[in-house]
Length: 220
Image (tube, rainbow, N blue to C red; front, side, top):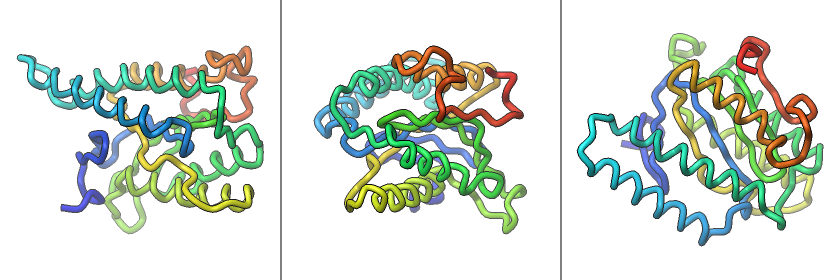
């Protein structure tokens, strides 16, 4: 079976992507995390997940993955925000604008864009994939396909602005299924406060590239 139709698949990291799910997605610039660091994270992630799966536990595989995801995300965030060398393409408003606009390409067509933050070297977002009954042709919308489209479109436009060629984004995104309203509230707060914690501004409202869909302002 192809990855395109799976609700659970793995490349370097396992992905749980049910149709109609809400997801916290992080994707970063190529080179933001060196290959050797990324490989070390992958091994640590796999080892910790397998350790938990191997232990006697009533938790489901999805719940165990969620536990490891949280730890991995914090490690990733600390690393990205502490980088002193580039690439930092999204310090340029023209390029940051492309990253933001690309998220809206499928909005209200295949996905609902709930929240995002464009940081200098990565993007955080919360997206909900549409169910087949919400899509005009009844398509089964898969998150990995949508993300490939978003990243391909933005990479092409950004590379043209930079007068360069080659890989723009790190190949794989980090995605996590959002399970309930409490978790959604925590994730939205985490996303919009990322530039504050990184020392770029004093309030989330001061960061130009923070976005929350008005329907979700209650989670601010």
